[in-house]
Length: 317
Image: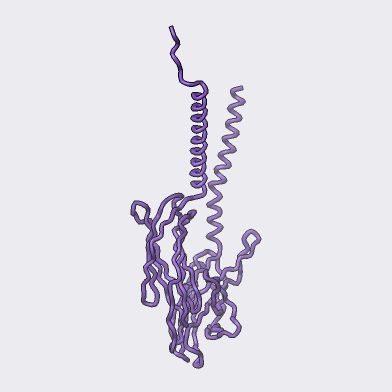
């Protein structure tokens, strides 16, 4: 019987060893597969330029292949616009609006790039002389032409560099801070929002800075973000703390700077509590209520019993 038990234990241990070996090798195989895939990186991701009417300018965008597979890619330009306060991007022409994709010219639109190589793609921007002054927005895209097929799914990567162009002349630079909000009760991760309106005719940069401190005054997060706000839009800029602890009380202070002025953000207090923490605290609260009810019921019964039997009297001799 002992020998049979030993054989069973040995067999189970052998199977467990095989399973553990498979799990240890699986991440390595995945990492090797990932490194053999195509990799597309584009720089810079944004470009801010000013032009006189009728002027032109030359520049380059850098395409970097950090993977181990070569590929062909094409470059092209599109207009750029946004919708909603979260800035949902749109690259299609707007009826009646100027399509600045025609302002971009490329000596070549098709390229080949090898692993570890960087390709500089030249372009020229030609601004029409009859265009009105103001802000104009477009994108240069780089798109892989021989896409990968991973698990039967075709992956066709493309990346874009956004161009914020100003045509010099009379313009209105105007904006305002509409609101600053952070809900007092949140689940991880902690998030606040700043809403900024651009009521002018030119884009402007908004710099958001915030500090999150715990209840003891220790700094937990220094947040900084710079976003472009397009004309006649409202942009909601999030202040985010990723990997927030599952429970805590925090204080948020900060400022927003745009168009040469700074607005101080009022202090917000936020209680962060994960769903599990809420369940635990709720369960403890319910348990305390139940204990209190049981205690009151027992107390009521004792008092009732005392009233029924009255005080104890001493027996006469």
